[in-house]
Image 1 (spheres, rainbow, N blue to C red):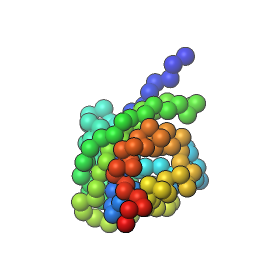
Image 2 (image 1 turned 30 degrees about the horizontal axis):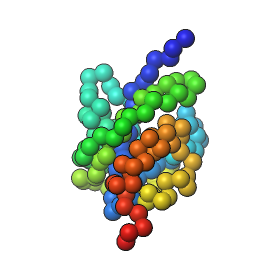
Image 3 (image 1 turned 180 degrees about the vertical axis):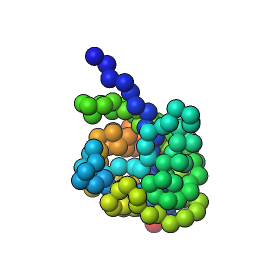
Length: 140
């Protein structure tokens, strides 16, 4: 029996050669896991419109979408998602977490140091070369 695939978008928010990750709380569907912020795409919006809305809701900042990376499908057992990643930057506001318990800015070399949710880990693996270009590492 096939599960319906839920389309979910996430923001890879860049700042000074680092990328934003956020941590879910103990009551969430993926307790304590780290992820890129984002959420489900509503029927009346595009994926790009959705990520702008989601980030405003979750982080209280406005973002600009710079481009899109390769989506990944991931099966959590109870649900299957298609995670659509957008490379973004903050255009205004200061981050206030409304749905997560922690945030961290990571360099490319630090991406493997935290406990990502399954889909986000898969996303990093599939887009590794693009992320390497977006997050220039040890060349400072």
